[in-house]
Image (cartoon, rainbow over all chains, first blue to last red; front, side):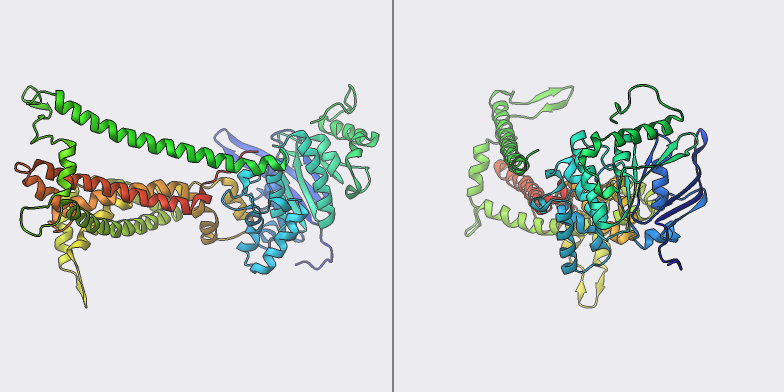
Length: 272
Length: 307
């Protein structure tokens, strides 16, 4: 634990990551400095190969940085993983096919020795939170992709983490489900007060969800710009924001940051 | 997808499964009938001395001695084993012998499954163990059973610990387990290595150890690989038990009857086929019993639907 009362959720300082491949050294990340405040929603966006997933994996301590430090709530990323300070969701839901919805959500609680009564109560809460009450006893193969992903989010929230790491969780969903899930995620993040680090390659998704959008550029992966979203509190956002002028302005701002220069052409046309 | 559509999907699939299973059974029965027809057809139409090419008999003689009628074999089952007074009917003799062999094979199967899974666990846990042991496990199956069956028997006969004394049937069970452990070891290893990377990574984020990962992900993921391996092991255990009965000279089992009745075939050709049919039925029963395990573990055979 740290002496400060409210340590930043994530603090990355001078993070480099180099992979050695047969073709030689590949620099995936270079000189990453990033702070995420408690309760803040941050999106990492950039083209393929910009290292956004690698950065997320380093925060999750699934990879380690070649140099630099990452602190999560004032402790090392490694200690944060041991202490279960974050919940994580991947692009695939990654549910265990032989467990029901409740069994999957209960998995982390079971593994960490939470008693049956407490576990059942918490799972009931989570099932209600992600709106799957009628499907609690279904198996993953009986659910749609969006439902599976909601189960995965519930599982990530099971131990009330103050940090949620999400690696393109809606990437495999169709556009309608995706927009629905985005609004759901904003509601859930507001209800739990968790900070979120969200990897995506969709500009509207990043703009709609985030307090700040971290724009990354490839070869080597680094932070090109951090664009604050002037769209009001994330928790108060709803679907009508998608048709708001301010929304399109922010999309343009992120696009310009991505391309490194003012973008010509019609505004707000890009949907992905 | 609407809620109703989701609720309806599984039963429809179950019904389709049931239809497919019935059809499979039908094909299986049809295969047996066709085999019987070929037997009788060849017996009726084939040359009496069989087909001989360059002193090698390619097809068997069609005499009643070499190829009794199927109905003769069937009716022979109802008659007594010998002409002696109070002799049991042949079918009862076969059933009794087959149950003894089945018991021994079951013991061998259990030992083989335990040893096979233990080996797979060790190989999964330590990479080095896999490279060191797997070639030997494969090689072990090339040793001819009849070569070491007498060895097992003579080693066993020297074991005597307190009140425990090695029985001859235990030698047979050990040899059966020697055939049974192999598919289990290989299948279980593949199964334990089968979990999706995403599941293993998830467990890593939970920072739990090898045992918890084994229990919650690796073992459940291994079930679809284990079930066919267990079935194969059951069939192997039966074959191993029969061969071992013959080579160790154990009395009372179906293997012994096969040899004994084959010796009487010149006088009673239909009788020799009875223990063979018994052995076939034994293999089917053993493999079929494992299918019950498949029912118990059916939830572990679900595949996650792709979104």
